[in-house]
Length: 205
Image (tube, rainbow, N blue to C red; front, side, top):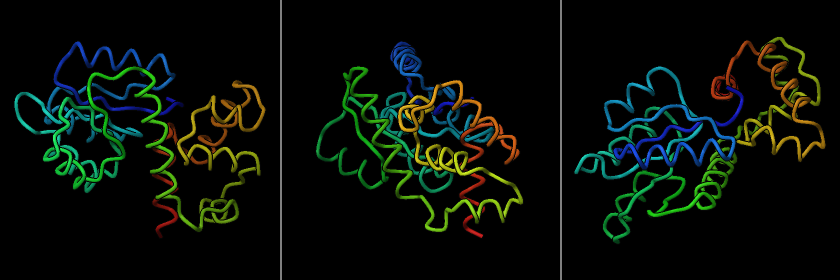
């Protein structure tokens, strides 16, 4: 999995399927689909997505808020609310859980794409360590990332997709994928989420 992975938490199977279609059309990877809190936590115990889309009302209750609190406090996964609720009371409760976005249903593909891109970029900027340099990474991991590989690693950390990285560096998609795979090999990682988690842990030492 080399693209941004998204966890869908939505109790309506038809809506979840539509969201999955939107995401795949936009070159995102669907990490998992969970129809309730139990399924969401089960998926999160296995691995971590890059971002989650959370329906507030799951099965006639507000389990979305419970999931959101766990995403923020326990799993450190950014999330966007997808909900039909827009009242001041619900909005205030949502704000207290630190979401990276709030989309009111119904929404279209453009709304979803824009919200995800902004959320991932903002989250990455907020969490980028000040000591994130090529020299420190190479020294701590005893690896030899090239300058170009480090630039791409930073782009990955900032939430850019492979296609966005190609546009930034004026390189082909296949070349970027080759660089990404070399980064994975050197850091002994297999996914973006694993790579970002490694860097974040490394720089907190």
